[in-house]
Length: 176
Image 1: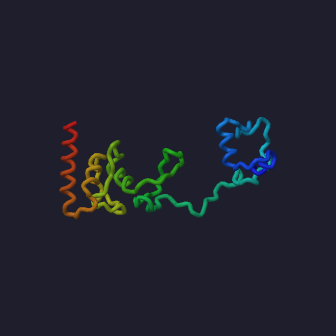
Image 2 (image 1 turned 90 degrees about the vertical axis):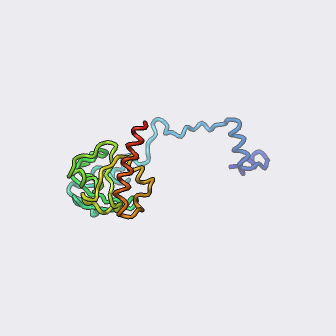
Image 3 (image 1 turned 30 degrees about the vertical axis):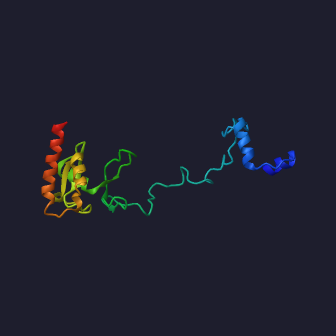
């Protein structure tokens, strides 16, 4: 465009100089970036040519990667085991959802997890989801355990550290 400008007016300005001039003077093209009223889209009346629509999927056809109920998977991001359960997903209202296996095992034995509490692993192995390996702790206790490097401690010290952390959290609560 700056070549045409230079030919027309006999100058040798660069494209950046023209852009700076237009910007500094507040010159606008008059375009809004929106479709004008009465605009006809190019794909009007082209049903089925632009991808999936309401008749693309027939009832009863399941995709080949669909997992059955109670199937498990290990999340590559955090390493927790998730399982597909017949519980309504609160976000998508789908009849099934994936839930962390350790939380599901705890809830089946002890009822729902209260607000402010988390289900943690005593031995810090995220794939060992047996009830005897799970503990219900507050988020403050989890914070303390993480600060003290609980997962890297020897197994014989872990019960003592958990007791000390509970004492520390109660002390903090009393100080508040």
